[in-house]
Amino acid sequence: MDIYKRFHIEAAHRLPNVPEGHKCARLHGHSFEVDIYVSGPLDPELGWVMDFADLKAAFEPLYAQMDHNYLNELPGLENPTSENMARWIWARLKPELPLLSRISIRETCNSGVDYRGDEQG
Image 1: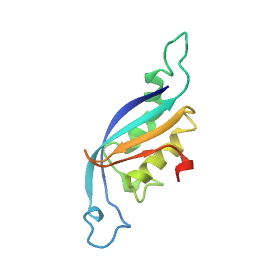
Image 2 (image 1 turned 90 degrees about the vertical axis):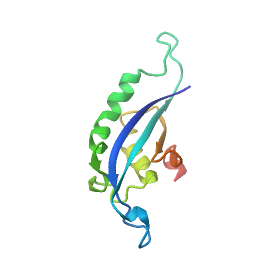
Image 3 (image 1 turned 120 degrees about the horizontal axis):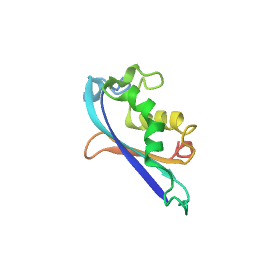
Image 4 (image 1 turned 45 degrees about the horizontal axis):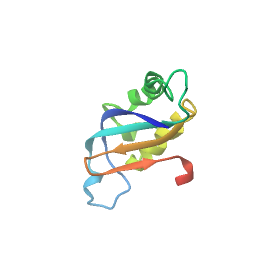
């Protein structure tokens, strides 16, 4: 069974590796929606996969680094595309959250990424 918790991150960034003149090379911000998914068996006694509070606590240190900050200044996020953000979160969260199965990030209403770990590249 999959469960998820959604987080809202307000952050600024710029994409330094896009072609000259690309609008994303300029400093801009997004209201990112980040969904953290865990997958596992339903505990027959508790009736859940895991406590949502534990999921929130695991993500809190990363949330604190990202929210209302300039993402390019975070080590490992010098090129903070949504894809790189998902991989960055995964690498830091998976050791703390072994049931982590997917990270979804929406940077606009129409654009986003789903990441399921390194096997996807």
